[in-house]
Length: 201
Ligand SMILES: C[S@@+](CC[C@H](N)C(=O)[O-])C[C@H]1O[C@@H](n2cnc3c(N)ncnc32)[C@H](O)[C@@H]1O
Image (cartoon, rainbow, N blue to C red; front, side, top):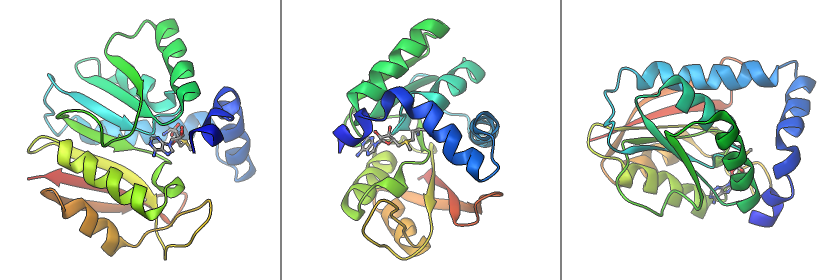
């Protein structure tokens, strides 16, 4: 799995830009829209500043670096299964001179307590076992009153590149470790994309 993503690391930004421009969506605008959506909510959550916010499946740090710049009072930790994605993200971090963000190879199920977590464009690439494990882990690691936000593609599960999950499945997995789904918002551009907010009890 990490080989698949390693192979895309150096051209990831260009590849995403091309995919989105086919559907008339601007890559940079889209990244800012995601970050705006997450930061707007995060600002109201009073997250613990002493614990990191996890970016699960951070890739080249496209969103993590923007988030760290926009919310300098918080610290961010990007994790990704691909060492090459992480190396790319770390290079960009150094160039940006950001100290409140770190990157490491891994998944959501490794590490200690976090203030909260977010994940964008990742769940749809995971099979059922991995999707469940990582959603459960993000919630399990989040401290009480913290939040986990992630986007997934709604639908009946099918094998292949694009993994879809039902609203009921997501509710169930999120609730395993004291999480309660607070909101499921339909994306403005892609109606099958569901933005999920989970609050930890
Ligand atoms: C489409 S990219 C999205 C990257 C980033 N979230 C963004 O929006 O720019 C999906 C990322 O998920 C990572 N990934 C896939 N499976 C993973 C897993 N089990 N654990 C951690 N990262 C994973 C891939 O390596 C890849 O970087």
